Length: 148
Image (cartoon, rainbow, N blue to C red):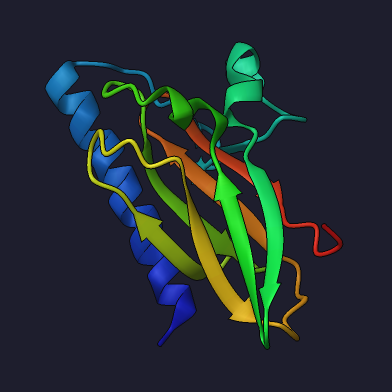
């Protein structure tokens, strides 16, 4: 499996979705994109940009659990507990240090998913970033702390 092409596909799908929404809604807002570089912007609690008032709700909670020789990255999205059909998580991804997709979980529109659980080998300690795609407030990232 080519992880680089998977990440490229995911970014292309996201950008196509944003473009389709702009066309259908007549919106010129290119939220989530860096106008100069044409790249996708990832927000965080430390750098919420225009979403400062939404930072706490989009700052994912990450816990690590271990069972035998496996390690699990548990991701919980605070705003998702409200189970609003109009505000939901579209996808949760794990990216490596080179921003390549390691794993991804996508969710149906309005599914009410509050998070995801990703399995890795117990020996895996490489830098990993969790990215969530919110349908209203762009994409948010947080580094996995393996010491949790």
